[in-house]
Length: 490
Length: 70
Ligand code: SF4
Image (tube, rainbow over all chains, first blue to last red; front, side, top):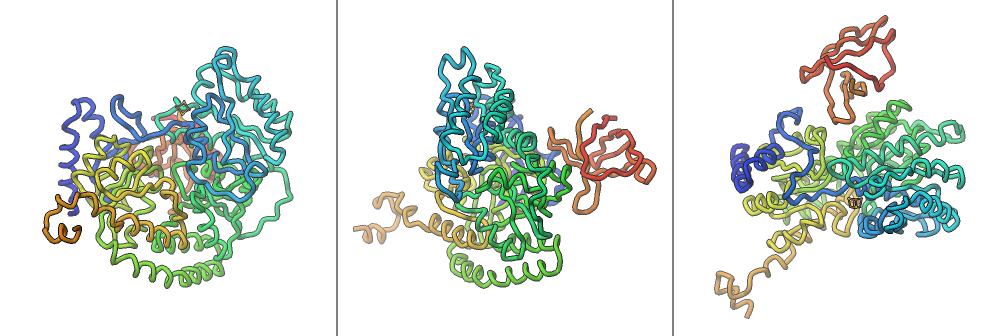
């Protein structure tokens, strides 16, 4: 059953009833029924606001945004989780940002480096310890291209001067040392961490080779920004661009490196996948180096073809022809995949609750498979993300910003979707409710999902999850209605 | 006096963007848009108005500037 706008509004009212009045009023501003004709979201939905005390939110902290999302995938830096050991250890390697290289030799993003704060460090300050760690790391890992200092909560509380340590250490070891002020208590979600990390890239890394004339640019250089290579996403995107005749000179930040970032300014076009986490640096590079940026979407054949054409339009006729050739080459393969999976998935209804770009970007991929997205929400989006969502989502679909666990569960109980795409925190709750679930932050240990190759895997995964025979086994045989099934079981 | 970034969007419209607030609006009216002077009072699509100290020449966009709320 697809709901119209009125029914969705009514559902929202009913779910909000259990809240105390003030809470209900606040939460009502974060929920709405989609109206694709809307241009601007600021009149109809409130986003990027502090979660209310007492509700269960799925958000993370600024450190998670900076270290986990933006800096974590950079392969040739040593990310020091500066503070107590837990923040880094419990988030270590959870996002499966794939890289090429040898761990511990020239790539380091699956290792947890921490200053392991103890009581005495809090009392006497950790700056000396930090300087020592940086020089030790430089001795142990000579091939690293830099060090970042990812501040955890205590660092901001005790007022350590990590910027001074970074400056001095950078001189001592002759490499990039980046202080990232991403203490977890800053901002309302991981989103501020993205911003802080972008600013640290801008201030401490980006200009490093500005007066190095060594790079030989071509008219077809592009950069991939906001792709974290989860399960190999950036690679399956990159091959398409290369087949088109473009040269990808930098990946931000999945499988990316410091030297790549410093030559990005030579790119003719900056391709931005995750707008939320890297629009800041893209806007900065546009202002400083005159490098235009463009959002694209590599989920599902329809959107990929659209994006390839949009990207090609920026270049000359040869590239445009190549783009058509690439699309024509993959179309039959995609048609075969759709022919195989669409009959198994047709008409299934999906609810999404993910981070900063998936709730809108994957809609096209589901629609290619004949599925419909009936509800979508972001953990930490801002209003400009919702501006971009309305057009993608069908009329009357439910939109929830920073949904609380109670709201999400109630919506699911009422809407009874066939599939939910969300994070690990939601996964087992919905498994227990008997609803097929995909973890859409890091593709449930699968991937890549970007590009044509990714769509093949995406379609298989959705089928595998939805049509898994286990969902029919949730009822005990004697509870099943028909006698036939009882006989079959016996 | 917010810090804003002015840029042209794909459709060629002038866009006003406040990073801290993620506030992005198109500029619907600009007092001085020609050569000789560029800036002055500007009105955004949402009806709010700002003042930008005029430049002598149209500047190279995007550009971060300070503006005054009117
Ligand atoms: S909120 Fe603070 S203590 Fe918790 S994970 Fe984030 S940085 Fe660490």
